[in-house]
Image 1 (cartoon, rainbow, N blue to C red):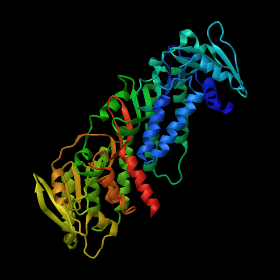
Image 2 (image 1 turned 180 degrees about the vertical axis):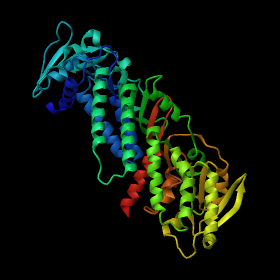
Image 3 (image 1 turned 135 degrees about the vertical axis):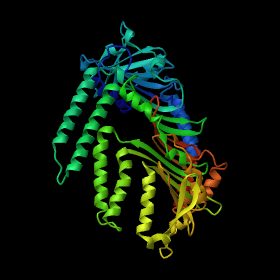
Image 4 (image 1 turned 180 degrees about the horizontal axis):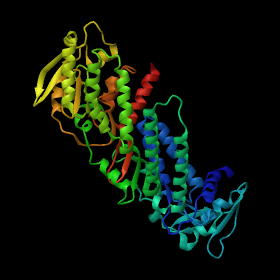
Amino acid sequence: MRTRLLPLAGLLLLAAPVLTRAADDRPAIVVAFKSLDGLTADAKYIAELAGKDNEAAQFEALVKRFLGKNLSAVDSKKPIGLYVRINADDPQLSEAVVLVPVADEDGLIGLLKNFPSLTVDNKDADGVYKVMAENVPVPIYFRFANKYAYVTAANKDAIAKNRLLAPTAVLPPQGTSLLMLAIHGDAIPAKYKDMAVTAVTQQLAQAKQQDQPGETPTIKAFRLAAIDQAGELIQSVIEDGSDLTVSVDVDQAAGELSASAVFSGKPGSKLAGGIADLATKKSLGASLIGSDSAVNMVINLAVPQKVRESASDLLVDGLKQALANAPGGRDLADTFIKAATPTIKAGVLDAGLDLRGPTADGHYTLVMGMKVEQGAEVEKLLRDIVKAAPADQKNLKLDVAKVGSVSIHQIIPDANQSMDENTKKLFGENPNIYFAVRDDAILLAGGPGALDALKSVASAKPTPGPTIQVEVSMSRAAKVAAGENPAAPDIAKKVFKDGKKDKVRLSIQGGKALTLKFSMDAPVITFSAQLQEAQGAK
């Protein structure tokens, strides 16, 4: 029986010596769980999606019996939470308070007194109860207020009447979050932030002094610049970070399961400005995604200014080494490096990939693109290469089509080089491959309908988009999975009847806050469960 209380006691004891009391009432840390009823309903929902209806019903009945028998004094319709206040004065004055919703105060006291390992004192003149537990060296205190039990360990002052926070001020309103963790940077004393910055600075300084075996001057310059940039970023996050909220959500109404982390900077800070700028950057990759996308990936990152020069020097040196013995001679290699250098020096990785389809024949079209600087120079280099190596022209046709001023070229695979079976299954026996060089981008498409696909993006303008995105349409990508599990397409047709609510997504994007989110539509769980079952039946 005593083991049921150990996790709660351990949580309070761990928080007590480390965290401190704040000068104001705003907690630095808040943890909230959905109500017991909500947790049970979500567990049942997920189990049913996975095809475990009987197990879900049994689980729900078991939980209801357990709650009715053991926790009837707890209000199962309200969220459960924990808040922590931090103070710079004395680490021993920690305030960590657990909020337990109460339906029956006398019933809860009676429940505690039924544990032989607990000693429960009657409430004192201030309305506080004291509990001593075996193997727990400090007392646990609690009081009733606002239809909650406020529970703390060691420090009775944490639940003084004038220190209590209303549940509505701490816990989020009833919503979709199974679990929510919030860290409020402005409630963490500057003293501790300064200590953290000092510790990081010392560690990075030591790292800078440690020379690496075989390190070239170019590599060393990059390493030192990267360390300096990391230190600046960490210091900015510590000093100018505002709120970090992490949550796990089950939204039954929307049919979505997700996990997210949202981080914001102090208004007016350089950090907040940098996060906001991410939302305004236009993305070439985002412009490549078609309406029939099965899988798409987008990345739009800029190398920080402090690292940019050393990083570009490192990449240019790498290119020089790679092309030292390139076919076509040193002059052609130098020309290639000259054409690539502006893109490298710009320090921006803006690229995208979109796998479209499938067609009626079950094949896909791949569209790819990457931002470049001075694309006209790259186009000129291409033509110079063709002139320098006329024997290779049989594998390349220039100017097979045009969109505005953009020329489209065709790559013809060597007939003597057979493709592997997986490639044939995805793109057909003899997939067409086309590419184009705009002044700001290199674009490529392969597979059925590749020329039309390339034409559709050749004039597309970069558009605002996420910093990073990976998205999979499970119904469209099912044929890709058929190599591992032949039943995948048939299962997808059955589960995703309308071809919707079939997405798995990962994204990072800026704006008012930096948001990292992973989500999946609820039917994806059903699809995955049935796919696994079919795999096991083989």
